[in-house]
Length: 436
Image (cartoon, rainbow, N blue to C red; front, side, top):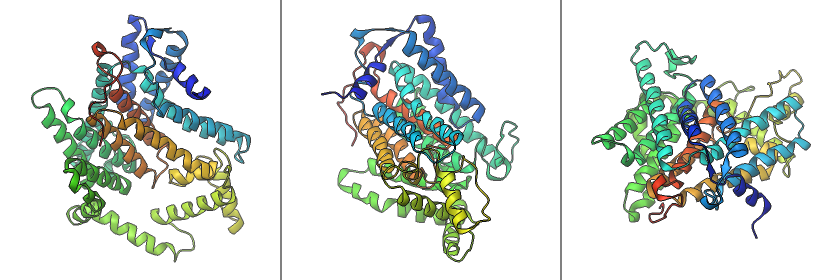
């Protein structure tokens, strides 16, 4: 029997018929949201607000067509998103965090609704292609701007504090490295969708210059790790099935090749080794790796003290400050926006062991939905999901604003792209070519 939460989710996401005059406005907002990720936070915030307003207006005021069916019926991701947000909201009942910190954290996780909004508002594959084109144009602008900074050309729109030193345009080199690596994977897997005689070749060219930007221009170690993972799985998919076991060794081989061919990669990998070795000898860690290891240790400590339900949403900073003061009464408190730079441990600290299971459920739901799509769309979606899973090992990539918005918008767009059919063919998607 269908559970009430799944039934209510399906009812809320029923196909919606809008007046013709609203279609262009809705599609404009969708394309704006797709183009905004990776750009400045002002543009991202405005786009999210418009997307939310459009989604609410659609659900509240549009006419519904029962004969059109339920386009998201059977999909796991919308249910997983609603369960996740509900779990964090419910933990307000026992959180140890100040109310402002707790509510702020619930709002941060509310960005997961963008995944569902993109899936609901995109009506057919034509609209998804428009949104994908907007995404590609914006990402091309971002990558080209980074290369221009690297070449010491004037880039007056580069507002990042790291623009002149680390060649990041709007965000940090950490976020931009991850974003560019994912963009390269999208260009590669969806190269067959590029229009024009040379569209396929141009898509491959974009993938190459984006990967080059990650490995030879940007310094983010998370970006390097994500790019190696995405490159490894892309190579695996191109190999005959009997050779795919080599994927176990591919990341190490690629890392070795990059270590000797890229100064950026070599310097950052060597720095990690040095920082980790010095961590045990420092009274107070000061290096990037040392600080992360210390934060992870504290997050595990919080989780072991509250293994069943965690310490509640938004409680990380409160619990970290408490543990630090027990060891050092002179500890200077971090603010309520702090996080342990590891998404899995952050969920574990806030929701206990069920929190880690919950983030696993969310990712598994996206994976299962992606496996029901045609091969190019499935591989693009699985690549974005893999990038998120790897990035979450080193950063709070869902909780953080810019990179979290990027993944939510992109995953929602890719799921819509894979499940929607051209308007002339109706909504159901044939699964004649499953993901491998």
